[in-house]
Length: 212
Image (cartoon, rainbow, N blue to C red; front, side):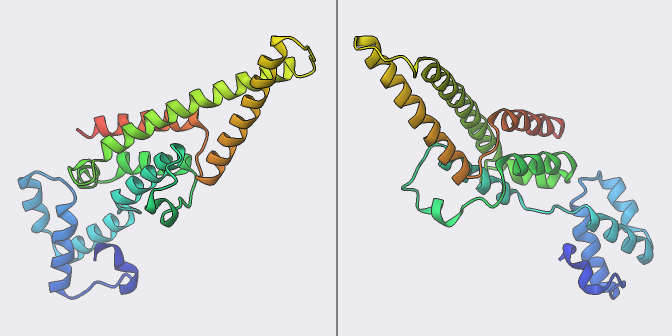
């Protein structure tokens, strides 16, 4: 494969292997036919330089890596406990880190990688928009929880025996339980700050638009 040049110790392979690697390399560059023809006429040493240079910027992860991660965060944020894949595919990094890496990949990888991310099989744009929607909903949940906590803090020391005391008790209980639920959800499924994730989702969308 193109991404295994370290196994060759950076030594130029035989001509047949070199040509095979070179064809695979230029196929990822999205070049016009005249440019492709010019590159094919390069000497072997120059072709090897192009292969090595291209290998340095080859995608670290395939599109499926990011799509699977985002889908796991979506299921976790919505507490889909019965999803069989949820237990098998626990995210290994914070959602904010994955989104940051995705934005870089969308901005710097070759056009073929971006097309793979967007194709009908992966539907990366749909998944990204779903996670953006999930992050916005989570952001509203956090804001609501904070408002309930503030309300319960203000009223927590008031001990009335009328209907207001019942309302205050309910708000206090709801605020605390909601805060605990959100904390467990965010911690368990490695979900980052919703505001940061929303910003990064928008940056990913901008990178996609710039590649169209």
